[in-house]
Image (tube, rainbow, N blue to C red; front, top):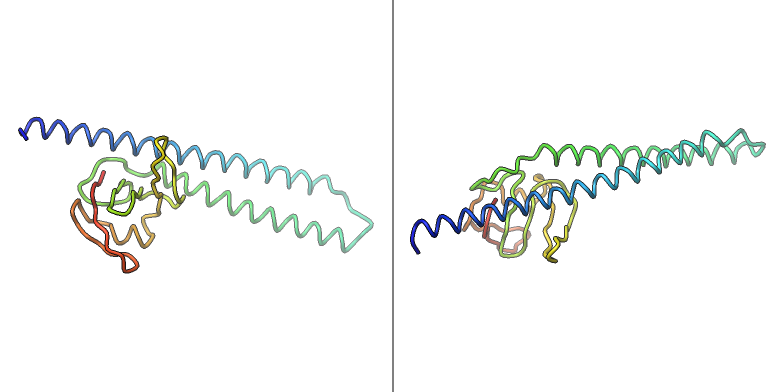
Length: 166
């Protein structure tokens, strides 16, 4: 193939890959925003319930119920903080293309596609393809970091190969 034609195809493929990363990022941010909104509503509902619950004549039962609400509230607040951190981590990712796998890379392998971002599990794209959103500190991401197209790696005794990196 002629050099110019080859370069043009490579440039087009990089653009498609970048659009794919941007779309994935937007989808993930939307999921996290939705989760944060839901958590905020749940937290406010519990706070309202706790505030409107006056002192009961039941004594110990009232105190036990209040302690359970406080415990649930603390769990929701912790979940909200973790979700907010994930959102901040996503927003700080560099989506710039790279020849080597790094945080923010979209990596196609022989066994699947991975977006090294935050741990959200499988994200279904509009065309039905699945991409695994994994944390850069996850074992699969650690096995791929700094690799480039054509490099082989092994995770849990299973061989794999990097097919594309963006």
